[in-house]
Amino acid sequence: MDRKQEDMQFLGLFSIFQVAYKIILSRRKFLTQITLTLILHLSFTNLAHTEVSKLLFPNINHNQIDQISSDEATPKYNHLSD
Image (tube, rainbow, N blue to C red):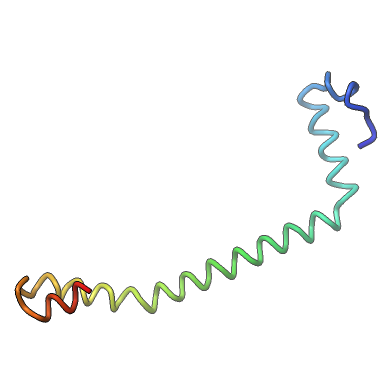
């Protein structure tokens, strides 16, 4: 930061955006690496969550349907409740 704290204390909204833009431009490579790391990590996590959900949801849904259609006192109901 090129300005002292006393100078930055009285900045307006537009000046704050200008200073922030200058900081972003001066650290462009570093901020790009951080952004890409976070975006890629979250994208892969979301993709993995989606694929695991696709694998597990039909089984969960099938078990719920079987549980609803069976009587509560039967061993099948108890097995599906576990």
